[in-house]
Length: 434
Image (cartoon, rainbow, N blue to C red):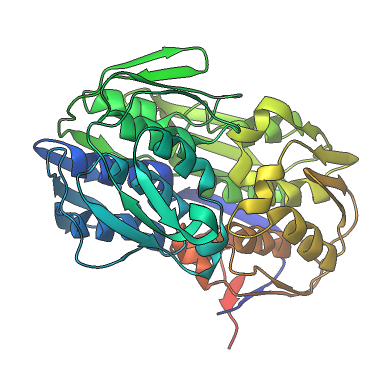
């Protein structure tokens, strides 16, 4: 499926984005492990998150869909069933990596696979600490690529592990495995990554201690709770950047998660000169707020260091903002982008370059010379949902029409994305190409 994008001069409105992808995954997995009933509201019914639902059902959890985004999960109270078949994680790295941590502590074996993109993504960084804890993980590329067989052990060995990169997925897998260890398990990161797992572990009753960048979990049971999933700030980022780059724009994104470990995109846009106003702030569970942005001049900045883990998924759309800004934007310390759904560093440079942006690829990031007019062209997402949506936003400010190829992948995180853009544009800015 391809999208044809027409430039717009005006974007106005108040919208809600889908539920947070990271929190939805965790709510399902934690509910499957917990004793009793977990009620989830605002669950993101995207392809990726529904893979997690299918996976926990295969492992014995009782899942009832009560309505749009509402799920009742009755878990197996720590002990899951051995699945009858291979668990297909589709394109979802979060499903695969967090499940590896869950399965490491189960007295059974399960095989995980995924689509062609996920089978290329590295799993060794998760497998290594889980093997140190006593799990058996074998598969392609010396057990570092899907498909992988995970054979759990109980109890696992307690470890103190220093992660080589700031990765919420690695950290989460080890902490989840730590629930089944013979003593406290500690994970220390080189920089802070998103902390949804820590927040939710506490919500479900786990004993957790945080000291700086070290998180320690004690083995023990989880208990079912109610989880309200806020809007996904990674999805909101596309609307915020659209509001920043379209000349006559004022957009409010309602009920968006503003967890400080995820709001690097807001910090970056404000540093570029955008005015992002937060309202209706709530602090219960995961913090949320309405976010309002209006179009205006942007200036190039440096995005690097500890800011990178807080906006790693938003780099593709921030690159569009940088292309429209005055001056030069440097994105550094983002080598992790090369092992996402695509090599995002190479893909951003290539595809924005086709639109006329001056983008230079670096080993760990990008240099973007802003102020070059974008010209409509035919570009491709390469099956990467975040790149696809970023290219649509670029098409809104390019001269002439832009065709974005391979846009079906957008459903993995933001069902209804095109409809949301069209609602703000007041017309058919984005159409499906026949």
